[in-house]
Length: 457
Image: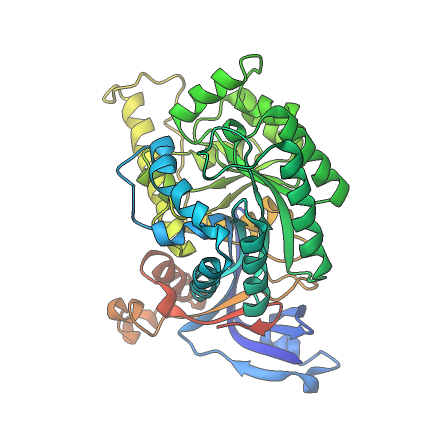
């Protein structure tokens, strides 16, 4: 099936290059983008008659699908619970008890059907999922993702220590065996959209032997890796206690050979400058999770600092540490955190803050909404090492896209009269539609979701 979409198009080419095509087209064949450009250019295509035409309205635009670089699929039932606790207290009181229930595949089926449905409906065309230690329910999640048509990484969680007796693996060998079983199960599906991902929960819950063996599996099967790093101050203290010989948190993972150019580490709130150099040199990325960091009081991650250090950055919901599954909520939270940091830095320079500045922050510039859109799309693709496949609308990439409609609630409640907007340029009008979606919109403004060219919403 070949389709061509005529209308307004927005996508990022890099952090500071958001391309606007006000009267354009995207041609899609067999799930891949064959051509994109001004509408007049479509007439020059030799096979133009073979495309089914989809015309967008003046209040609609195409945006690349959102990429959630860090989400815990089994934790959805806990959204909104335990957020009066810190990270480690929250894990013990809420997270481990809930995840232990996924030994029951029937329970998992009920939850995962909702997880995939609702993330897709919110515009998440690609999700990087933490699952659980149980392969029977991990397979349920995999099957549900394939059935509903999402793109995803699915991680069998590995943890052989410092977890409750009712939710822990029996040992290193058992963990490795279960990982191999799940990896080969997913690969046997031969589905290009869904891949296994090596998933040590974090350094506290995995000893060095297990982490090294997981790194070997990642290399053997050429897989991505995901874990957590430098999220919470209590977590940092625990890592220092368990790994006293290592220079810092990143050095623990580096010794285990987990830091690769296919590795994404969630949070990175308290990373030291030396750690940023290590991550950048290894090509390891960070999933910035501002909602979770705020809800659990972990701190405010300075995404601009990471980017300035040449560390790849994407965004993550981190449900249920984060209290929303929608990526546009994460975009707003990322912008909020960046602006709060900007205020704090400049107050400290002026001597009105409680912390003495270590350097001049007067030239600090917070994230803007265009950059935040990049982080949620192409930045996420780069963080997950799939930017050759998705993330924007370059020819040859798969058509993972959102059809955004600003004519419906809640955005239409705040629209300006057309007489005012007519005085602006086409690009200015399109930018204002994007701003409305970023700051006001929600899933009701997502009229269509496409993954590999297939409409899944």
